[in-house]
Length: 276
Image (cartoon, rainbow, N blue to C red; front, side, top):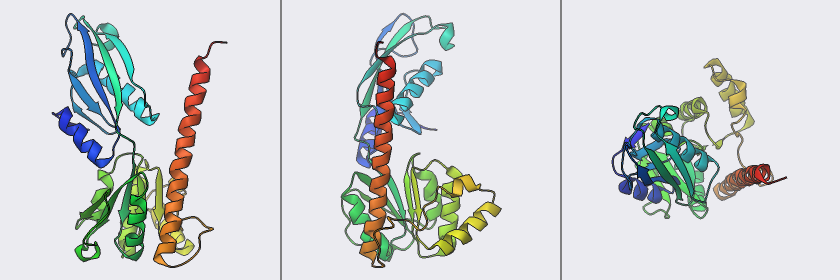
């Protein structure tokens, strides 16, 4: 877990990259506590920045913050903690924490490949609530100018970029090399924490990849989550723009479905606490 020492810098960096986070602040403390009123930390799904004192108090705060992120919470929340035996801390004091959701949640999309379809797709995704990480090893394939929201990543090791994406990311794999597609695919499936993974290619390519992936120890339950061929079936055509529109449509359908699920979950929770 990454941990930096400056919550202000963390918020700026996360805001620039379109990642939602929770700002946790000690707004009140009594007697002995690890940190004083005003201490803050920033929590994302896979990292924390700065500290409110460590120990089990910080662990509980981190857990609550991540539950809020997973539920796409938009309202602030306050919690009071007594720092006694139940929290495994012997300070003997008490602290009130404020949890503030910050930043508009953007869909984090990794696009591997800057070929014809990649060049048609990335500007299209940039018009949506997406933060695009466009990855390729060929500098000449990237256009001189890109739309806001596109982060071009030139690297000799595109496979390593899979581990740099946050949980719940969207992955689109369409490189110039089938072996590279295979290596990236294997890393994505081994993580198995994606919201969407699409691989360009035919059913024949899918069958060949699945055979190799199963031999590498990746289960069918995981490989069946892979979209290949990807894109909306009803949008046909072989032009880069047509393929790009088909893929973008599937991305939109996926994040809309996610939003509907979160809304239904929130409604069920509200009903559960309503008085009989």
